[in-house]
Length: 238
Image (cartoon, rainbow, N blue to C red; front, top):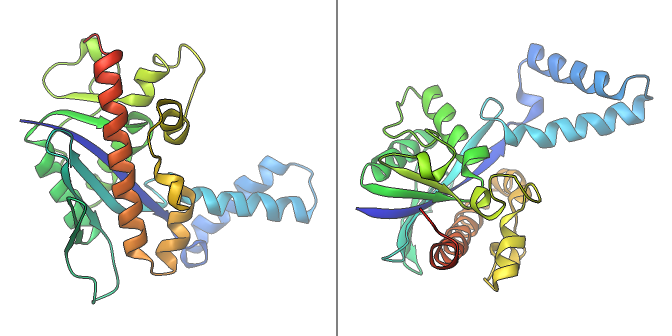
């Protein structure tokens, strides 16, 4: 049985390709936020709305799913590509495997079946719900419940260790933190050291830079795994 780090990368839909009703709905929401603002303010709010499409599984999609065995230091990144030249390859112990979103989700749930711990950073607030909703959209039933109980001491069977929850003590201290800040504090190389971050993924996907996304996801996995080792050694009580 394994301790598996997981992480996803998502991309928002192209607003211009959405149906008219959805576009009108989002435009109305933007206007309500601005209130009596002028056209420039409405336009700025609409740009924020378009940028935020990536954060919902109803208006976005998963373009990469990464899994890494903490003990073996080996894993895989399943990623979407429209480039027929992108064949499966291995880099630094991680297999980069081109797949459709549906194929990625099926493979992810197969991996969870052999895990005793699933480890994430903000996985309860983002990755796990996103994975579950996108799976349902593709008519795939999740094989494990990654949201059974937020508190680690109350979890039974498969444990989902959300390191953000653990490092801010379930929000009792300084609220949300990001992976970069946590890694920086512990002296861990962060995935952003090479100039890519999550906010870039939608753009990179539109530009066809699929391998850049997969490699960024792999860096996320290794950073999260190293952070887990610190937490496990110095802060773990359950």
